[in-house]
Image (cartoon, rainbow, N blue to C red; front, side, top):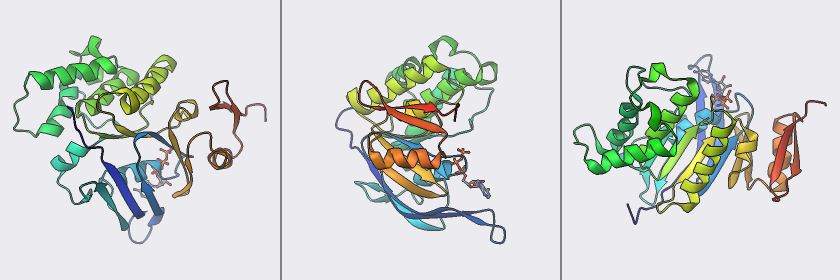
Length: 270
Ligand SMILES: Nc1ncnc2c1ncn2[C@@H]1O[C@H](COP(=O)(O)OP(=O)(O)OP(=O)(O)O)[C@@H](O)[C@H]1O
């Protein structure tokens, strides 16, 4: 597909309160954020609100206040019909949300259906897109196996392929490296760079990540803590690095790698 518009999300003053009217607590405290082309990693400690923010950006988390608009159309993602939303953005859930009875290939094909609608008849091009998504995430070999027969990492790669099969220009991925071994984490970081920069139709990718070595490969880091954005900028930015060390309470150390990018280690001897 050529000439694809590159949509951005413009989120303004997002507030989310969870847990009911009496025992409720504020989880997002007024976040304002624009997505950008390239690969952005959203990081922060457990409970910071990363998944809630990602769901809010995807239009899947009801807001107490604020608004998320998809530009250049100005579409409000919370009121957009799911099929319209699916043409613009795809979301990978932190917990897989697919029946284990489907085969890997059927699961990936669901990504096409999300884009085309239930009544569409898949054509040769849809099959080619499905095949390519499985190739990119390395899951061709088990295409005919059911999800419940796969390991956690294999299943994760199938779910990622389903997201790629949508060909949405904006990918919102919640912990895509979960269950992946080191070679597949590295492969995924390369794939994100490829999709964001070196493809004919680049995607904007926003990933929630706990893997800081992978997150530091992104173009932009969003550091969250306590339902607020603490820092936003490239990984080499001094304010971003200071926020990282602070929100992870000194449990990490950052140093400059030979390529000039920051490198992270756990402060195990501290
Ligand atoms: N249904 C709920 N009711 C009340 N509080 C909730 C509910 N769901 C989540 N929370 C709280 O909202 C906060 C943010 O949760 P969220 O899952 O967005 O954090 P996170 O940064 O993605 O965490 P993690 O890194 O552990 O996945 C947490 O403190 C969590 O306990």
